Image 1 (cartoon, rainbow, N blue to C red):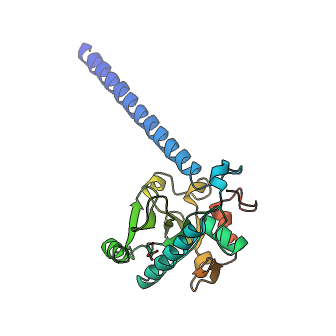
Image 2: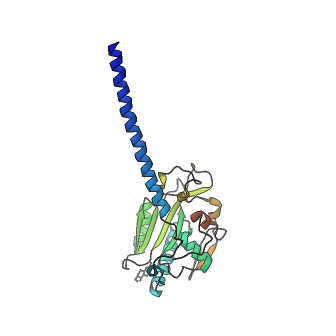
Image 3: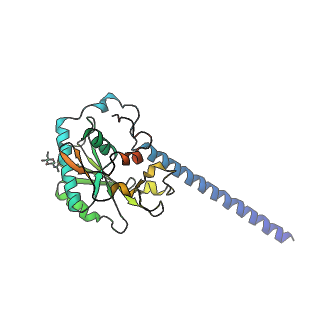
Amino acid sequence: MMKIKTKYRSLAHWCRMNKLKWSSLVILWMILVLIFYFMSELEERPRATPNSRLNCQEVSTLHRKELFALLATTTRLLDQLRINHFLCFKSLWSAVLESGPFPWEINAHLCTLNNPGNDYDEPTLLRTFRKANLNLDYSSAEARYVISNMSLPGGSPTVQVTVFEEDPRVGANIYRRVGWKRRLLPPNCDSHSSLQCFPASLVALPLPLRTYGPLRLPAPRDNMELLKFHYPDIWHKPPTC
Ligand SMILES: *[C@@H]1O[C@H](CO)[C@@H](O)[C@H](O)[C@H]1NC(C)=O
């Protein structure tokens, strides 16, 4: 009898200990998810109020020229690699409203689609851009490439390329943002706006072309429609710097 009691006690103790560990792991996990959730909520959304005057300064003619040259080469190389791309985020916004970058906008933004089974050949990608004297930095957290001209100093214009993919877990004919930061989130488009899901019909080929300064670049269908998915709360307001 005594023996059973001791056994039971030690078992109860073991359970308590493990339960404690288990719950602290769950709490730790929740905290991590929350941190990443807020981090991803914070970025990418333009501020409703203007930044300091410094950031509102008009971009110089030189920087403009550099941006258009960089963008022209980038889209040419992406075409050459048969990577579908299109204007998105603020660059789509400015293309629709002003047919070119906003006066204070120094960088441009493109998006690409990474379909399962058709992953980019990373070495070829790097080699192709290097040959054209362009830097290609990749953030795997954000699934974003930042392209810059190797010959120009820091602070020069960049082209940012964000990758979206189809994810059977979020549903058919839906694209979501790639990146391990977002992989931590449950694949639910409605409750996680940072997944920035959008319907595949918006980027059905062939894509229409839009004027962006001196260039004509592929753009999603239906004018501003994609912006409603990028910026659900503020897409209809005039953008500020
Ligand atoms: C990079 O910068 C150099 C120097 O200004 C320029 O000659 C070249 O055309 C630029 N390349 C691209 C792809 O923008």
